[in-house]
Length: 198
Length: 198
DNA sequence: TTGATTTTTTAACATTTGTAAAAGGAATCG
DNA sequence: CGATTCCTTTTACAAATGTTAAAAAATCAA
Image (cartoon, rainbow over all chains, first blue to last red; front, side, top):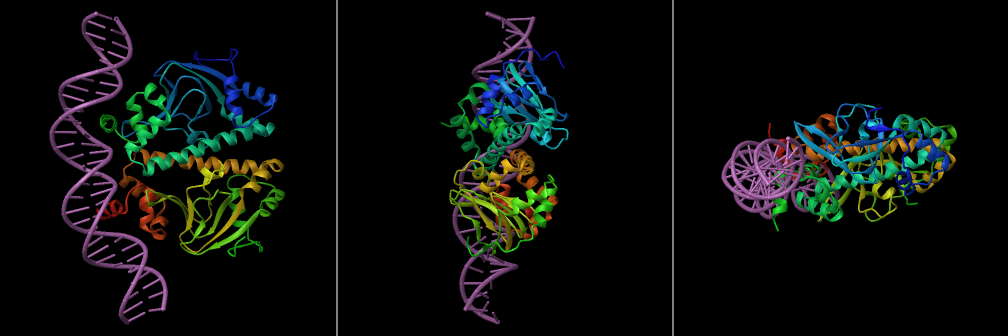
């Protein structure tokens, strides 16, 4: 446990409110989940999880923003962002057990509730409602990812940028453009050009 | 039930062998799944599922190839392919219950085992091992999709083409290039150009 | 506040990819 | 077999995006 994590009393209500939007679970199940959580406070620009380690924690963003990133030929690329009241994990490592080539970096001073994934998966046997809850959560994330493929596969960079600004104006206010560019699959220069026209 | 589907005795062994690679389920669970399956034989170039309908069937490809496709500004775009011994479904409709803008077309004379998804989801309550099986199947599909995003987000068309030819030589042998082009996120002309160099 | 650092924009040019049209090949069907 | 249709390649040109470098703007820290 680092000095950034703690087992001091945590307010789990935002997490459980989030869970409720997918599937309601019993009081006992909530207690079982609470027992495998810890709080992490990470300052701006620091890594919550570093590249090369296997993903063994699913994070709920209580406050702040995080991004999953990796390097392609030395260039920093953002795979995804997570705002308040959402989960973030490097699923390609979480579900395969392999080390991740990706890291999680924090873009503002942020608070996370970390859920130990090995312990969580153990709970599935005893609490079927927890397994169902996370099944639904990841099914929903899967759908989002499929829709993102459609966006990358056959929308122009300009279309993707405008879709982003309309759907999530928060992106522009809170995330540096250099990170948004690679998220959209383009360079920072291209993004500047798109923003300049009009 | 169309004339292309039947409830005549089906050989489920390829399906259950496939399931076993994810999670072993009981004999009773297998029987319960078999009870909600039907066989579909679809001739080359016909649609297995047409655009506009809600996805209520998960298909296992026993023989042949299928692709999920849609139209973007009048252009036919392939989202994904499925070969023998894999599942295919329009998940963005399956998990949301909304009508799909996508269809499933068959590229060779093909045989499918169709699993009714509403009936399958009903089985989850009675057979937790079935829920776990499909949880793992879709987690795995989710991981594939995340990896595909990485490919589309920051690999050039040429890199994507060469990766495809190396990983799945079957693609080139069995799938028309016009479908492969849009799957890679490029035009047919661009693909021809990439193939021509060297 | 000031100076240093980081982020964003701009410019010039190279490369990749798209578009449209035509030609060549391959497959299909009577 | 021949004719038709569909698939793939090629060509020429246009548009989009990448690369590199520098300038401008914004942010950060002392």
